[in-house]
Length: 255
Image (cartoon, rainbow, N blue to C red; front, side):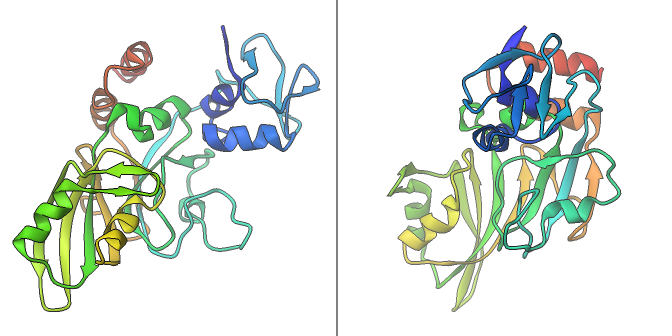
């Protein structure tokens, strides 16, 4: 069956779809000996010879891995950083498989980060189409009144469109700062920080505490664990009506 090449690369655990598209644009991907640099091109993973950086990839040989990491501040959520900053892969040296981050968590943010080599799983968890809830504890500068909390719940129009959290509540407050718990179902770049900047309450600290019903539990900063089969199933069940066949196939393999 033919699929987009970036989906095949992602499904082999080489990189996320977005990173695979960048690899193609850089001329690092070939199909049957021909360089392919257009993301829309399709191929058959079982019939065609697909290479990334000259290495033959095989979709059937991948051992699927699903991890939850408690990301510290000061780590980049990528597999390579041109500025040579610490990357989250540095925290997974005991994991033999090549895994990539599911979605974003910026350099100064911390908390729960899923990592996998399953491109379909990654896509379903992070894409806004599937509306998988993600919950954060946000420390903001300044004090809030009860009416300000209602303003947060209503959201705001930012430069790249409207933003509204699923829920928000004030957990702690003093004269200089407040802690807000917030649940969202999208992952636009620095969306929470940009939102609070827009209402003049800059973020001092940002911690992702859960994705779906998967929380940090007892994981200390910098530690990781493997997701259990039941946890993977619960995340797939949250990912909306789209890709029902893919979810069913994955759930069957986990049974």
